[in-house]
Image (cartoon, rainbow, N blue to C red; front, side):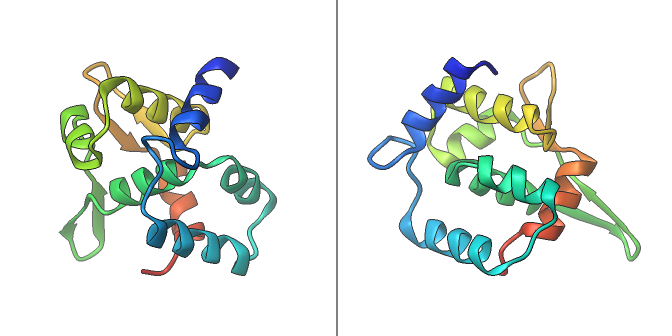
Length: 131
């Protein structure tokens, strides 16, 4: 995603934008960011995340499947499911996941589905706010 795509995403997700997320989620994420000490890699990524992206990452993290007691897997989410859940357009979805892919947190597949990378899972295990 180029600078233009990132600027469009920030305009959509900023205050008053159509992707601005509910205040309760924003407050919880900001509190977690302020109260946790992250390593330099995590801190750099956290500072780049927009609240809508953090919300999408948390939602993708919740798509885990307990295959066996010691075997956990995460399902990829089809684009239409994410679009419907977050009530966003296909273009907004594309901007969000392309930027998350740039950060190395998700893989976007040929069919538009997105799933957490191993780095994304590890990142969320370190920085994810307690629910």
